[in-house]
Length: 320
Image (cartoon, rainbow, N blue to C red):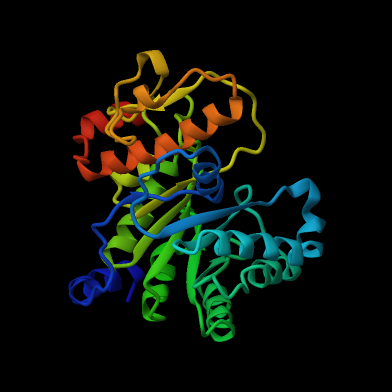
């Protein structure tokens, strides 16, 4: 029987056994957001208990990954201890279509051997690997990490996606992460929609990692909206590879970013004040950057509470 047919057959019985709320939606903070909330005393509205540790995997220094695993593990553990109320997941941020060697795959697993991490993310060795290869990789991670919850992490373009997701379900796993880099290619929109619909149909809780919060190219709406529109359960942003000072912008109620002077008051409550009232004159680029990032999470979480998906025509217009 084909993977798609098996998915349809299992859908009804799966939904009856759900332990997780697959109607829940939220935007998760990164480790930098938690640190900045504490440093700058910025009020935050975080839904749920998950947070994301982003580990940037720069390819020019690829050899350093395996050499520095102890240091990287210590940094992850420190954040887990500093913010014990959050369940961290590790998002390894790397470019699309990579094949990892055995040492690099071992690195992914070793740096997550932290007692405070209840969930560990298993990235595919290569999104083009076969179902059998994926099954062997998954079995190995499950057997070696019996005390932790393994969260498979897939690219939306992964080969044989439907059958891989079905395998995840058959292994008794309840969560899966999806790496989302925006609508850059012609198939990106369809692939994101397809994998999130497949996960939802089997009652698998979906994380979406690495979303670029602002718009891509001609898209007007925040890219946070894209996975939330397709009913992802929890979404997180990426960490820029490099940066420069820009004017402060705020996420508005129509899911677009605008300069502060053009922004609406927002839905967040900052100790009785609107966000525009909370913003004070400052010459600190660091503060403005932190406030904009945290306010984006606050505003997006408030917007998800009243999210009414746009009709198809509106959606196509926003993301064409």
